[in-house]
Image (tube, rainbow, N blue to C red; front, side, top):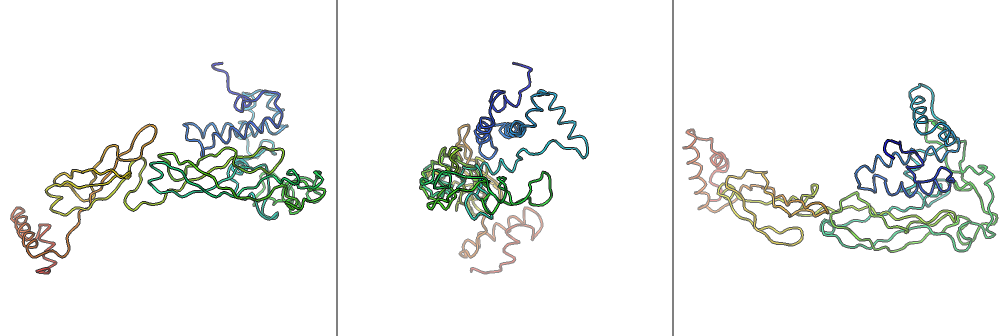
Length: 379
């Protein structure tokens, strides 16, 4: 309804009587879709912040009760009043942005218990290097991706009997020490006995060592869409990890790195390439043959009197995207000749004298200055 503010329930797309599990599931789906590193849709970052804010409140029972009692507008004003009051802060205990980052691209999802805290994080991040031609024209790459899969022997529980109990060392918290909000320093580390899971198997599974998952490697074919650039990520749904039997498998995100090209440099949707010409061709103008990134030959007109560093644009010779096509930018580099035959050197001297006559003063012409330093070399 126009004029009615969007509630946190509306943002997550859940009902007011949604369970904690339903709220978490809705948040995970929305956060993946609108994360700024994944979505290229305008306004994704702002939408992601609102999704995160809604989840921070509704995932905490105490804050959710307060939100339901106050209503959306009053609760927002309540929070604003708290933030503006020195020394006071909203109730702690709900996840911050660090948890959102772990939800997406946790690369410490496998390792020793002392340094790895297995969570409900099931997404996998991999990287692939491609050539500039592949980035512009598209294609397909096959990569090897390590991932963890739910142990078939114990069903992901880590126990041969299927039974687990709270960790006696951390009391089921998963932390090696007390968890406090806003404390300085790196914060508590994962419990060394349970690896941060908060539970231990009754009888450790011999197949997975009690972890509940085993490490594997799979080969994945990745379609490279035309126009992709370094830093962009491709999502492969359902190809993440399957650790926890209570949480569905995650997704695979493939981050692209475009390798440097020997002739072309990408600048947005434009492709820049240098062309070297002699001083004579720069003065008189010329026509040079070029080859585009996709192998097409074309002739480029260099206008008379062109300066070093100037550019000539070829429309449609750049990167093609859905909305537009960039240009090929030819950057002029005027090369001064080195050792040249005596006949050519004599011609340059004659040009230098003409320059001096035109300027009315000896020694001011470009060619005159050049040849005064080279003497009769090349004769």
